[in-house]
Amino acid sequence: MLTFNSPSTIEEAVASLKSAPRLRVLAGGTDLLVQLRVGRLQADGIVDLKKIPELRKITSERGGFRIGAAVSGAELGEHAELKKAWPGVVEAARLIGSTQIQGRASLGGNLCNASPAADSVPAMIAAGAICTIAGPNGRREATVESFITAPGKTILQAGEFVVDFFLPAVAKQGGDAYLRFIPRTEMDIAVVGAAVNLEVNAAGAITAASVALGAVAPRPLLVEAAGKALVGTKLEASALAALAAAASAACAPIDDKRGTIEFRTQVAGVLARRAAAIAYERARSRA
Image (tube, rainbow, N blue to C red; front, top):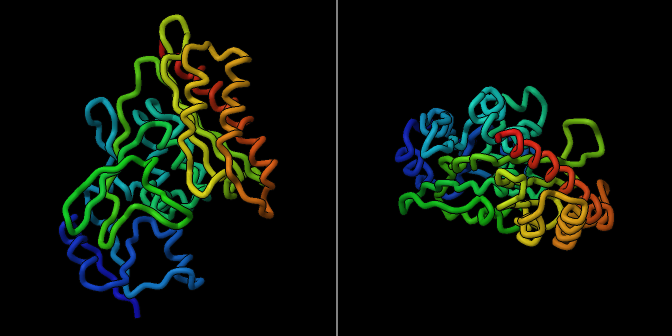
């Protein structure tokens, strides 16, 4: 029989997680409950974090946004200021599951599930997102890029959970975008995902760029060479070709029923190019 606890503060949640060796944290539950049902995960109990106010709100901070780990995809999509500032991050989160799933699925759950194909993670990596982690030893911060270490594995230690994410202020002329390839038109797992976040100057030249990929390696990747290929350019054909080549070169995918190594490697370059074009137009439109 599973125990169930629903704390109302961070401190209560930390204390709850100390009470038994195999407790699982629930935010939206769209991954956790399925994995428990099929026996992929074992648990002595569940600690539900949704009643902790800090995990359920979006606030403006230092020109950026702090997003609670249990905020749902539907709530992200309804936040006009966040959508305007970070459309790529919001669009990525809104790709997770169906309309019904969107009412429950959270950024925290998508990250902590630690799937290489998680849609929101490349977008957050490209945005430079930082997550706050709480546990028995207090709070600490980590980049989203460093959080997943292998499929199903994260940097979380015993008794720790993600409290929130901080998205920094968007550059005056900055833009981001996320695209994925799936075999169907909706409600599928990414075969490849690509996120681009960039800044341009008044002349339209790119002054900074970050590129992240999903589903092409054991963990989501920040591809520094791909970002560097864009800096100093105006997204000319040669820059896009260099971006695509760097993105494909970073891939270390697997063969499975949804895509071959060769296919994923090629599509990574294609999606990176397309996402860069969208991000560039969004950045230029802020002028």
